[in-house]
Length: 358
Image (cartoon, rainbow, N blue to C red):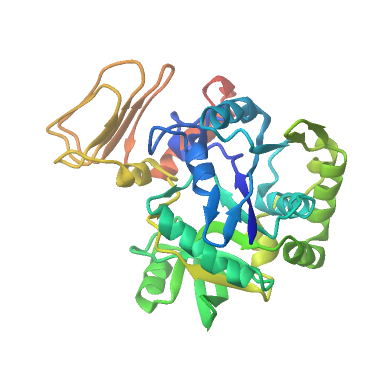
């Protein structure tokens, strides 16, 4: 079975400001290894895995990121990747629609694997095994998502409630978006719930059929944007006027919550969405006091801190649970556990018209 990976790379990672910017978001940075997260993701879905063959990936991103992404992929030996450039962000339903349409026009593509470019997966072999198991269901017309066993009542993730067993997975009984702390704790105590990793596997016609039934306006706009788009070599720029008419809605809301074909495959893969400095700190190597740093960073009588030194020496002295990030034009000092505050900083900069810092 041949799988077309479609990598979603259009986000800006606001909770990792000032490291992550619109023109150089977290997925284009080497935060978890020597390679960018985009390159890590593309490598993860390349080659042959048993009876599965990964085709050269499609990377869906915006124009600000396209040149850097192309350079990184080429230097990593992934020059066969194709780029699809969005003129404006329209959320993940539009991306899924474009993925299904382009896969249907790709010779030999049996299934689409839709996945974010900015996630960390520690166990690549387990990830590929989960994809292989999911392909059994996707080959039968099921829309497969991958569930991460929760180890804490996290309120920053969506949850999937599993139903009856079906082959290597389970029917989906319900999706719940980012619950409050009490609800998340109840889910954890009850069992049978997974974190929603936002990774999907499906046959192109299965998704097109569901979108024609549930959100035809999204699929129609995507089809027109592709048809009127500009193709130059291995880069397709979607038509701006057509794509702008596409409603902005997530794939979960537009399709997965309303389909009877949703299935979840458990995936114990060492997953993180790296959605905050705390999440980044969690997966980084640490010293004996629980500190992690990048660049010229020293920790003196400090515990459980994260430091990033861009172009200056950084010393954290006598502090706990802090994030300190220094770049060429900004310094952030924040509670490591409060990612929402960092998002608020970005919103304030936008209101001040400080595009130079975004």
